Structure formats: C-alpha cells, structure tokens
Length: 110
Image (cartoon, rainbow, N blue to C red; front, side, top):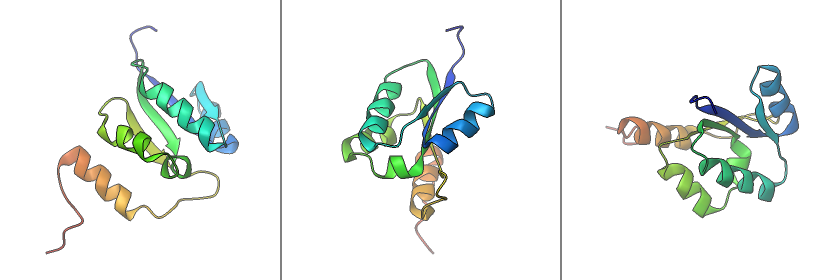
C-alpha cells in the first residue's frame, strides 16, 4: 500500500457494482451470510482499511460476536448502507452510531 487507507464494500451484487462504477476497487459482492461475515472479519483485521461499507441487511444478520466487534472498533469505521432491496428500520442503529461517535444519547426523551 502507498500509505493511504482503503475503502472496501461488502454488499449484494447490484450495490457492489454501483460502488465499483463509482471508482471503489475493493468491492465484494457476497449474498451468502457466512461469506459476508468471513470477509467482514477479515477486513476488520486488515489495518490498511479505513472504511468498510456493508449492506445493512448483511450486518443486521451477523453473528452477535461479530456485531460486538464492529461496535467496539474505532478503525476501520464500518458504515451500514441500504442494499438493492431498500433500507431497513434504522432509528435505533442511527442513534447508537451517534452515541458511539459523539457520546450523545438521542434515545432519552425529556
């Protein structure tokens, strides 16, 4: 590597193709959950990645241990995105991401 941090995408074929067309070279079109989990675990261990973009459906269905690892890691940043089927309910996960990044708990209402 040339000292730059890379971006990787793990998603369904259509989403991965879109990112590839946008210029992101490291895209992995994986529809099987086990393959996606294995690739995500591998990329989390690779210090050359700064951002890992993952289809939120794949991330949502991950093993709880891998989810904990994703939540606990500061680098690389894991960004869930909607896949070709569209977004899933995100209110809770967005609040969790804000709490982790900024320390603000948006779920408590006054």
